[in-house]
Length: 586
Image 1 (tube, helix red, strand yellow):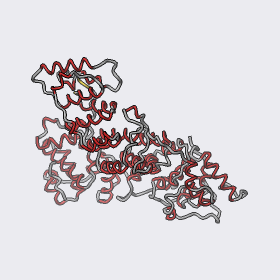
Image 2 (image 1 turned 120 degrees about the horizontal axis):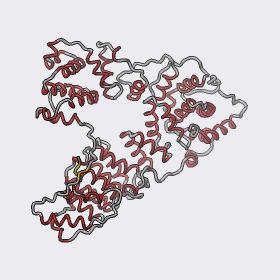
Image 3 (image 1 turned 90 degrees about the horizontal axis):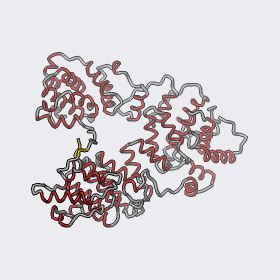
Image 4 (image 1 turned 30 degrees about the vertical axis):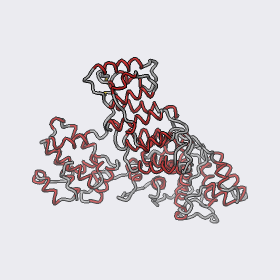
């Protein structure tokens, strides 16, 4: 530790505090499975124990400093160290036809209730896309019956749940709102550390331009400073934490080793945080750790990406608990499916068991049963029997809540079976598991026999067309009026109404081609629209879409969604949706 005894205690704190503000954060640049369906610290400075840290989670380093020295109040300090940000987001409102004041008329009680319902849904890709746009568009905060903190918490919870880490990083750093979102920032840096990507985790701190208030994040920053050979700066931050009495014993011991104050390896292991676990690993050259079922997903991932997990070939087949852990780890992506099934191949079964799998499985453990079924899939050639075994194995994993352990291998098996050879009773199983992540088709085929699939849709492209579509749309409607056999579908109506909303003049003589019913829009959504509450209306649309992709939603629901967007005048967002639901794709 640097010798600071020549400084008075107060002068010491003033220098530390000033330096901290100057460069602290800029220092780095029983279900049936067969059914289908440092030098040591001076003794007068006391370290608090880990438990004491739990008593100060709401107090930042700066608040502790203010209280200790009788200086500025907490509120005054916060005013000095942070700026009130009214517009926080990534997207320009005009990009999607939204408004900077879209939350201004929102009632917080209603917003919180809608989000509570949405949080219970496993949103589809389309719903996720709309909600990302809504939450991450630059706009003023709602003010009625909801605090800024509550609104930011909504954003944090959503981003953590969805875990698009590129989006999270862009949102936090572009807006410099780390202190407003400490949980979200922790989620981001912990993710990179769990991937054993220390460089990337520390790069985040190099881009933070404001003093870090959260204790955990400040410890992470200290570690990154040391990791990047900026030890003097790190030491000043450590001294500040020590003087304020907020440093934890475990962290300082590990840092002492990394700083070279201690030469003896640190063997104490902590699973309290991924940072603690990483420091446990880094400060012990002989580090070895045996994960359990209770071990967190992040630590499992860290062990996997750091090559610290046991090799499959070294696993004893009699170690059921260990194999159970491997199955769970496979479900969570920490072991590969290939590794798990190579383990299953090592089980020894006789020919009778392999020929009578269903009966044999009755006297076997769950793990042995899965191994037997898997080996049966490998040797079975008859398609229906093979599919039955696949279904049974998938059900077995589902029953234990580890269904993701059999996704990739299942798809590999299914791709080797031609769809026209699949028995009718296995068609649903085949289709649902073959394409769990269907690729969005992007090639649009123009079909000028059907209005909503015709060349008219080109006028709705996001880049504005220079040509007026009035003549083309009216000419098409003229042909339809002459063709008595033409059925005017709901999707045709959707397209025509979109043109009308854009100010395109449709001749009155074509008004009788179809009828519309404004009452199809749910009353609460219509109330939001009428009151100018754009955000709440869009939130409800996200809720309506829910778990369904837009292409799978019925036409009546699509109609009221587009009608709502027409009334809100959010044309770019509307057109984005229209291009998903109207064209013929190949």
